[in-house]
Image 1 (cartoon, rainbow, N blue to C red):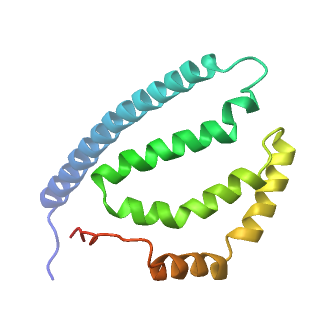
Image 2 (image 1 turned 30 degrees about the horizontal axis):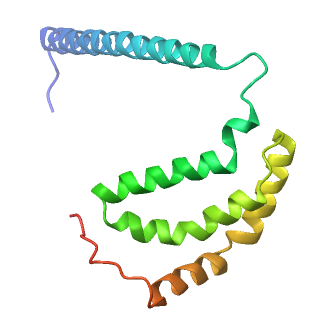
Length: 150
């Protein structure tokens, strides 16, 4: 392989420098966009935080009846657009009911302790598998075909 002339070397170096400068400009542009998005998120967080009372959110806001109402509304809304949701909700229903009856939300400490206990008692693979088998083999439940999305 022959020697590279100084002119060719300088030309390659100049081309490389121009490419790197272009890359720097693109990265600077991306930094500006990301900084703007971060500021938007900070603003949204501050807005949401301003809605929270000084002493925090009352546990009463998350009473079992409110959570159940919201859950049922969510399932109903999702089932309209996704028929498989009725199958999933049937699987989740016993878990949801046991969670509402076992988990105490009067304080963060009691919530953590009771949620861990509930999880240990209800979410093992064998328990979930049994729920699924019971659901699939229950003759009283009838589910239409579930569309497979490609």
